[in-house]
Length: 624
Ligand SMILES: Nc1ncnc2c1ncn2[C@@H]1O[C@H](COP(=O)(O)OP(=O)(O)OP(=O)(O)O)[C@@H](O)[C@H]1O
Image (cartoon, rainbow, N blue to C red; front, side):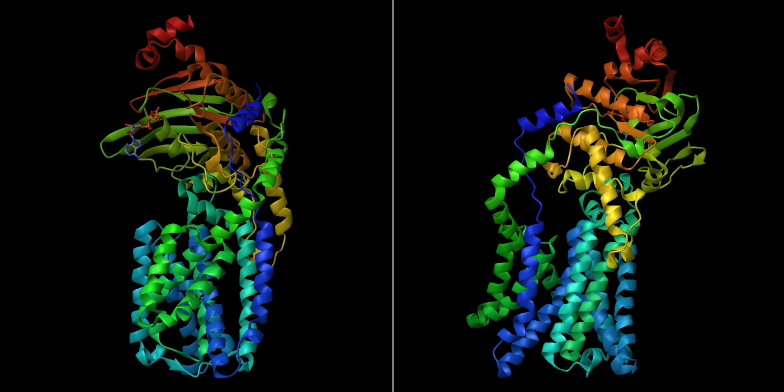
């Protein structure tokens, strides 16, 4: 049975829940939003009431910038922030102080309103680099409070508690409707940027960061740069909203940019649907206007407002847009399921991986050349000497297998070699270059990819997105390419084609299913496909046969050989000795963190020390 048949059977056994492309929904929602947004000034009542509503519409619009920033920082990248009002305030004060207090031109104020939030955002990102979840939230709360204190107390540059008034508008636009349209155009540009970002390699890197940092770095993503990207985009959009807010009201004071406001932005994001642009905008509109709609409840309106948000967060965790999108999928489910089956499970036989086929493929590479050298490698965890002075060489084109009893240090060796752990001592050379303690993404970039013993994928993302992330190190599109849509399409096409090729190689084609809905065997294949998409020369595979039945293991043997035939050198950890005997060119045996034997399969299997420590007499008798 081919790997593909195996995958097909998995599919039949598990009725998979399809994930459908949401493009049409986005387009319809987007178009509706554009039309309604531009027409709003014509729909409002006239006179004083009209002015009041226009002020509220403007406030809603500028809030959208801040929450859009949160979509990127929190929704996409998973970096919890309760400091968005601080960036909003920094943007507002950069413009207001420079124009009102220092008499600088409006343009300079705008530049400062972009630069100051970016710099402080990067600073916040850098100091909270290693923090996640509530620890990160706490740091951002601290940052929010500090900024608010600074705004209050630095009277000479902020005007202190009295605030600043007579803040100008750009190009002298005094008319509220014209200024609103100006803000709206800027908002559309920002939405377009965030949309393009989401569809780019950088957007996928942000999502990978949110899903699993370790897996992201093992797929070639630079965690530092990606976190900095998340913080800088989040703070910049906050800053843009801030300066527009200052211009729209003409007066600001520190109280507007309080912790409460940060919580409101947070609630708007969650209420709308945190990783959806439209959801964010809907959440912002609803929560900005809700107090207005509840005003008839007089003194109870704040309590009702708070209660509604709590109920909403508990019962609708995916936000308003989550409900809309679920209903949409429900309505079109049957159709989509059929499409999915056709598109996803197309039987593929003998697929090649053209972009990995090298001139020095297997026939030419069994040439005794060491590409990976491990010398005196140690990794201690306190008193536990998990790896204690291990030496071995991996030859180009070999399938080199690490075996040994449970707890002998095999996974720790791979974790150190792939940069996940730093070595306590020793040296690792790859293609004659010292790579000891290099960051995981740099090792991937050099050509060594890995899979994990406990599969590490990005569960909320589709199969194709998971594998496309593997192409991160092989592609270049940066923020400028995204902003100006320059050379993006060709690169995205290439990424997509290579990911599909890698998927076809392991048995998938055009697969849009969310990874969390796949079977264990399928997930293993997707993880291998993601590693192949990094275009590796060397693959570390940690117990790929774990949890597989004998039939599946035989399929894996074929896959290992096919990958090896492409010219990929493989360092494999495996307990299944039948698999080992079928694929291994060379075997290294560990016990208690030390190498106890090495050589060909025959040599190792007959080594008395290996029999005593690992194989046991029974295995030897059975083999005989
Ligand atoms: N992060 C860690 N902190 C503390 N101890 C660790 C850590 N990782 C591994 N160890 C310890 O190091 C030793 C080697 O573990 P390791 O997982 O490398 O063994 P292994 O040979 O891969 O085992 P298995 O075959 O069961 O996967 C074990 O005693 C383990 O408890």
